[in-house]
Length: 335
Image 1 (cartoon, one colour):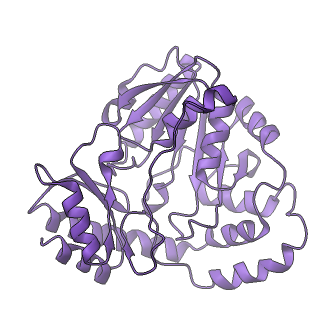
Image 2 (spheres, rainbow, N blue to C red):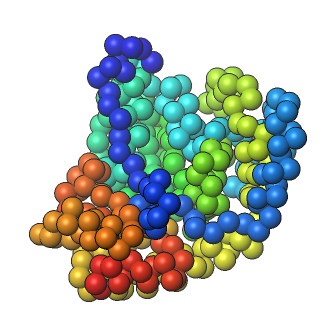
């Protein structure tokens, strides 16, 4: 990363509200926490008096069990975005082309540009049909943010195989895959998986995640990773959360049920996208996005202005929260 390159790359807008008096539907984090997680975090204070273990074996083993891979292929990172950045730093050089889906997480293109690379944008619903040959990296978000759709497992595996055949690494961002029962690509040859623990377990400020890769990329990630890059509280809390199977199952069922209910209600007034994720995207048509956002704000709710995503111009994204909170949203939107 060079000063000359960074100067021409801006920041990207994101969801989340810091206003304690506002119910936040703009960030896609679980409003519920696993029982006992606060105690685990507090108990980790003593461990914070020393450097975290290096390597953090317990955390890597928990992550491997969580996604179904060998622990030796896990690289701990402070959040999923750190795994994405590290992968792009290792794969992309000045002038390199990268397959980037849109509309999707805006940080992919930003990170590519920070490295002096050039995003080659492909519609997210056509990304698995793209030719990976000649690109330094291909990226897929599964389920995709902000649209919410998860990709067919066989089609995704076939795309990974084509990337492998072309000699193009595939970066699979699985930040929201834990909300589904779909299998991870973790451990697949030629694929780097980026995982975030902060969405499913409702702890975005914790900054805990990991990458999974095999072969030469696995070795490169392990060498490039900074020592002590994940704090002792994040390691302890993350290890605990990844073993909470009952919490994960209950969260998936609540999200599925509430998402279906919200989609049915919203579809009476808006064009609602299918979703496998803990959020719903809808097109408000010829209405004013700002007007709808202000109406929600008057009801104490923060929604995500999705027009900041490439290719969207009349869209709003809302998180799937608890039933009573979702009722407040539907009432505010008059649906």
